Length: 389
Ligand code: SF4
Image (cartoon, rainbow, N blue to C red; front, top):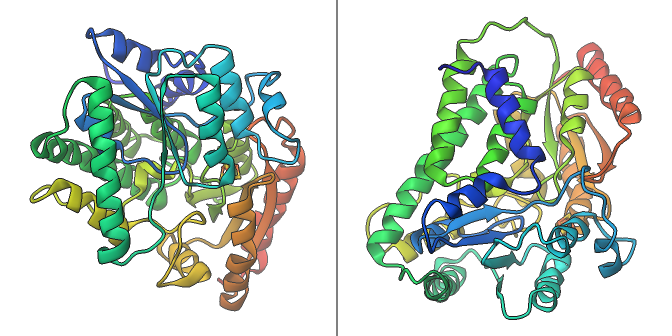
């Protein structure tokens, strides 16, 4: 039966709200011995996890539908919300089916969460993944290749499935296909945000957090096919790029609020791991070298990575131009050091380029959207009335 884009989005929305992570549990239960390896934002080498036969499950917090009680006891109050809700998920046993956890070097909070996990789940497989901040192939590339080989050996030991060059190449191929589908969905949203609104695109993308990549690719392709031919009323909204929401995710209701206030979100940095490489990873030759090479040459610009070429503002201005956006909305999680430290440099670039912007902060459990609706609605009107961009 063909599903409409609204039906697909509604199904994905149930996955979004499911804090028991049923699709991942089902995947694990489908064959004896299967393992699930979880990871937190922003980046993780999912190809290596898949090549070891495990499900790479992205854990991005619990949003606004899990009351954080014990999680608060682990962190001071002046910190973002995501580590508290991830701890709450752990202490409430919702992640007990996860066999291992990877914590990338996103920021101090995530790094410390890896230590916290070792205390919470003694004896479980926990790794801090230190990604390179040097983009010279001979320095950062070599370092990352070595790290990937170590990680592959360790995850292979956990799953009992050794990562071989062939299995890693096959995994790279599968993830390349997934990223190609994601890119196509983003292109459709950029060109026809009236047919593929972000509130739908986001939940379709997010469903991939708990699905195997091949099934997720199929889901995205189904959404693209049906959204492209759907009949929807034309809307005259302002085109905006969202920046800063790469780690702790904004509530879905916040995304809908921004859209309802008169904005088409035509580019964003949500769930960045799903679009991490700006070019396909090589599917031939040494697969570890291919992944290392992709990391140092084709990583998407973000606040948690060093940007040697375009500086902080250049990459954003490029994105604004490519998306034919009229303005930028800085939407950063409260207390998010990387996003908020980046913002002044990005603002400086936008001001020099004459690109309008507005800014607010949120938490994944923000529940009051009216002030944001008024702010983004005024911003959208202002751009339509007076912007020269
Ligand atoms: S929201 Fe920001 S500060 Fe908090 S864990 Fe993520 S990157 Fe770090």
